[in-house]
Length: 508
Image (cartoon, rainbow, N blue to C red; front, side, top):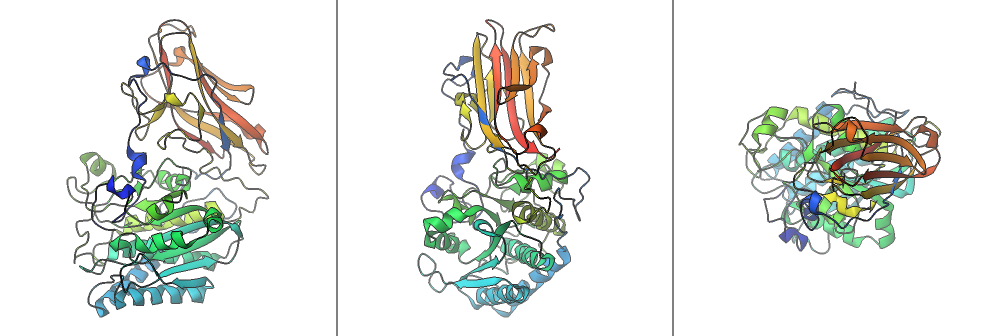
């Protein structure tokens, strides 16, 4: 990961490393600001979602979490991940103390990773970077597990190069080593594959995301379309780190968030690294992305220290881009959690569940946290934003239906296909009901519908001081495509606002 930059400038020319499309980080309140003043709603808005089934049970643990697939994701041995780090450290030690992309230290790193992958049965390719890279930079290394549907590729990557100041154990030996052990674990387990998994170790990231940019530019449009999501791992063992996920509310991020949620980590959006690592190269071509990070030079807040431990007002990685980024600069607990979360994501996205049908709910609701604009929601899209006067359940954006104090109807919708393999499926959502009404009479109502069937009705009588998680059963819709619709209807006076956030589909 490279040094901090102005996120705005990254929209034109990325120059360093981390994650997240900067445009997604800017709250977008509707014209007119406060919801009560907003009067440009479009009535009759519907929601369509693709359902799968694969959330983590609450009893999952750090070392061996259960996965909701017939073939559970394995526990990746962090001792083996650290052994790969030791090899990368030794390589740096033999080559002037670093693994910069233009050095023998980088080329020896490529040789080490390549040898392990070839021995495990991967199809491995060294891709020279023939344009856009620093003169003398070594190659990208691409490894594909030769099983699963080649038309549906899930790609996992990390930059293998470091800076000249030191051996680069956290930045980015940590991501490279975790990825390597995940690849070897997949080969050793050799499960039946539903989709294709491709791994990448990038060159010249520290000089401007050059290796990954070259790779994506070199693909044909058809080849890019086969990549359904790209996952990036850059600095996942910061000693004073936090638990950050790129595009945390996106469908791509769903399995990554589900795993860390199962550990009670309360992960946050990776705002520090907006557009600053190799995922940005894929975002430029509209390929969905996510990934884990634990932070670089930004400082941990008091709230984060209270939640995750560590020292407030101190950098997440005090050895960022320094000579002290050695084997002593590794948070083994964080490295373990990230390594296992990578495995969980691989199993959710690509491994055959063995149940006779795909039931992976991770990411079924697209943009369920409303952080990524309004798409694919339709209807009263002006209801979505970072509105003043109220707050989101998580992130900065939410959907505010109603709250007008006049006769009105507002709705939001997405279309959902519930896979036939789902024996149970539920739509969960967080709802805060704020009202000026009093008493138990239902003047203003909120409904949840599947097609023309009403599954839930709430009203001003259910108002409370904060968000409440609610759910409706969609098991009866297994094997069907259905439009889900959230609707708020108000009478002529006294507002009731229905604040909706973090809509997801789950197995159970």
